[in-house]
Length: 118
Length: 113
Image (cartoon, rainbow over all chains, first blue to last red; front, side, top):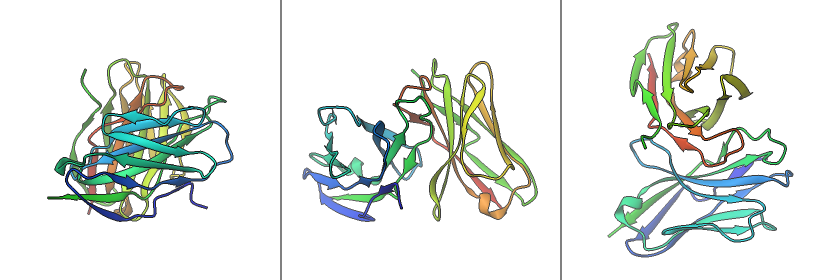
């Protein structure tokens, strides 16, 4: 089974509108972290936001917020007031094993290509 | 504070050759991880180093190896290159082994002919 599933290969959104990028995950580990990264065409992975499995509140960073629904195992990224510069690939990722100190690798989804239009 | 730097940014090699990629983490960061990104396989974890020790290794053949120096800089080596090794190789650093925020460099795009 896929650990991280991003079901939207591509999304379009108009400038200044909000958009939600979906991410579901699969883990039996009670201690994990969820990440969203943005990858423009230049290739660099830009860290956007992090949510820990024990965090009580949804993470927010500026225009980015993470809609964390633990029971449904979903961690959707919400971008408010989209800008043309938001056009990029967006990856959801998970790190397991936070509690026992073995946490190492990030497991990535296949990504969603977001295109912001005028 | 400078970000993660990777050199070279682009590289062209032929099958059978070997290649060494370099990564300098953010100042003060002691953990360095390497990832391979290809259109077919997506982003895959290669290995992570912390304080010069390999902490974890992904499912890659022994041709892929790495090391970390005392200043936290890391190198990744691929020997006997194959066409399928063509990829974007991304390096990421974080403060320590238990810190979660991880920052990536711009990547090295390797093309194997």
